[in-house]
Length: 449
Image 1 (spheres, rainbow, N blue to C red):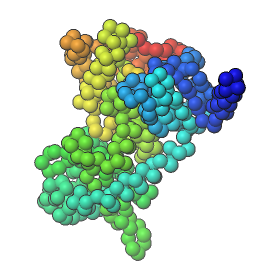
Image 2: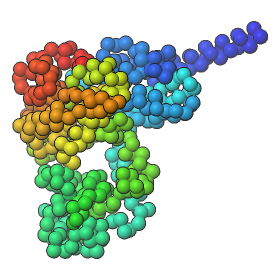
Image 3: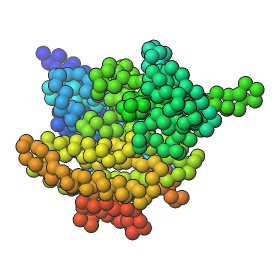
Image 4: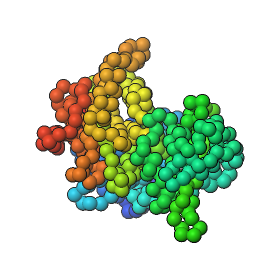
């Protein structure tokens, strides 16, 4: 018996040493997130995320970059199994070090009725290559799909539709008289594109050989459907210059309409959606926003950002429980879907924090849209257990100018404007100005209650 106990202690020590020397971050926690073991790699990765440098709770440490993790773990009913696998967490870039924003991978396994194991790793370099791999995945699916789901459109050098064919009519319902000579913007719903975005697609196809885009398109009867659309250049056989473009629109399965989504599409959609609100998550926001700023560097145009925060959210949670807080966040997400355009990048980036990037929009335009959202929220109530809960939001607005060099600087300005709006009494929209820049940074990053 003593020998078995000694052997067990030796095995336990060997396991602990292995965990501490593992090349990935490992965290053991209880079901409420309380950390019981953390190895040095995990501590190094999590420390920059902790607002008070106290790593005693996994959910609290990851709240800003993975606000739905607590819900995922709480809703996982099985006694053991994988709660999430390889979720990407996008961190804020340290502008002083002039390096790209880091991306962490998070997997969480439920080990039993009372224990969780989290595995963390730095996948920044892998994410850099993901865009190309995603294109391949999308078009491998296309090869295996029915040809009836495709529309093949020939565009001239300016993006106008050159000719009509049966595939266009079959997928979109448009006839020749409605299409020939029109910009391919014809296929987009209102608010789903801008002239700059249309030009971006053509220039990206010219530069990279193709431009891939997923989103809503409009049929002739006004209904919409979701597609994966690729534009490729058609080069002159003599001089190699681009004389036209090929646009292929492949209709995607839509789970909301009862369609069966392909596994790759279903997995990708889940990876880019916030679990609670259905909006884009932090990963989706950073990927789309970085791409939009990259386009602006090539072809300058206005871009604005809005940071949005639910006022007195801690008080809502205290008075109505987490179910009440969740109901408020879902209500706010629905209001944002009603307010913003299809082309706007809308996401939940923290617990009660949301971000919106508005392409081809100046400061005044973004402020007007933010005010419209504020009024919409202030005039409505959320029902929680038969009780009406009133709440308000504050918003901070900033726009790109020649002094802003990256996404983090734009977010910082919008966040400063948001803090100033809260400081002035909440339930208002603030726009960034030089005065907002002097707000104490320690104050602006404190928990907003």
